[in-house]
Amino acid sequence: MNRSDVVIVGAGPVGLLLAVELRLGGTQVVVLDSLARPSTVSRASTLHARTMELFDQRGLLAAFRDAPVDLLSHLAGIPLDLSVTGSRYAGQWKVLQERTEQVLAERAILDGAEVRRGVRLTGLTVRDAATETERVELSVLGPAGPERITCRYLIGCDGEESTVRALAGFPVTRFPARRRLFRADIEGIEIPDRRFERLPAGVAIAARRPDGITRVMICDFEVSPDDDAEVSFEEVCGSWKRVTGEDITAGHPLWLNAFDDSVRHADTYRLGPVLLAGDAAHAHPPVGGQAINLGLQDAANLGWKLAATVAGRAPAGLLDSYSAERHAVGVQALTNIRAQAALLFGGDEVEGMRGVLAELCELPAVRASLAGAISGTGIRYPAPAGAHPCVGSPLPVVELMTASGVTTSAELLRSGRGLLLMLGNHPQLAREAASYAGAVMVVAARPVPPEVAECDLAALLTRPDGYIAWAQEQSGPDRTLALRAALARWFTRPTKGVFDESIGR
Image (cartoon, rainbow, N blue to C red; front, side, top):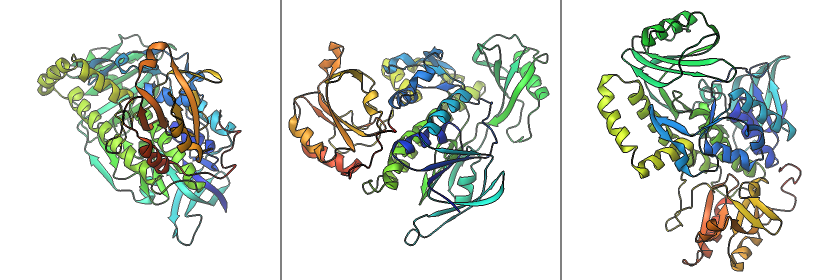
């Protein structure tokens, strides 16, 4: 039998980033994918600010710096300015999924992950944890025929129709479809760009890419949501003609896709040694480019926790916090997406609500909240009672002056460890973290440019995924005991050599 600490099913962006995170923590990982070679179809084409911050934390940003950035997004087709998030990477980064997969695959393999293609999962058995170290036995069908693989943990990153989710028996909450939509990449057509144009017969979206290919998406009110047949180019052209009045039959389709606006959400992301991430955990219509970003953020949350668990350096409950935190985020995101879908793809009956929403979006506080929800920068994980307001939020990417020179908060997280960032002279706080050396880096710094230095924070404890776990004000109440609790909540005192210094970049 083949053995591995962790097996990931699905070599899409989510599975590959998870492999990167696990290797950063020294975990042996194998990624299986049923496709013989990487897909050239880019279902997703938008990366949001929080995803780009995560990529910066892992030194992956350079591969995407040339991507076009659009500061204007939408909420159910109503324009929404994303610059109000204040993130260094605000906006929609236009990156084809094919490119994202390529970058992540190269990094995962470079860091030592094994990626096996043309391998399909056919069965799994979960063993008794009290008697078996390798808790999951997989039956797979590869190029050489059937084989078995055992692992301690299995992660399903295998999409909306997840085999892992089905075989493991995850319960799922479902919201039925109300509309059926078509999507296509077409070359050889000249039509106006449309940004969620609502018309009497439906909704039309069209965007011409720099390579000359036009992606269209059409919601035709005459099409039944119960039709699950494969879509043809003739159907796409017919719906486009019916809704817009334009003839696109002269074009050549490169890719066609039919989907509906149903929503499915796993009730938990963990059943023992089997976990879900990405579309395997939450499936929804592509409104606002949320899917790939939600999934990548799942991977960032899960990776360091699972690596610590496999290495025996995880405090009690650390792995369970993955499902607790990310399921709550999923509920918020799916609620937002369902509301958008209802307002975007509804008929005349939703016009009044759309008008009210457009007025609300003019209010700065509303605009900032909605932009943060779409960008991912507004995520807040639960914080202890009495904690500083920033606890549970992502650490902003800012420049810092350290003893080694100017760096950024993102660069300080590239080792995959926790970070106690000392912004003031509080040696007792550094002493609290001293026994966690190896798991938590202690860095003294001051923010630059000078106006940032006016912040009231004296110190921050940040998790490896870039979320603030504890904070101390310059002149506020002493939170040393809270720091002690936060260190024990998220980290253990490691033994020498538990981190592989060669992996972090």
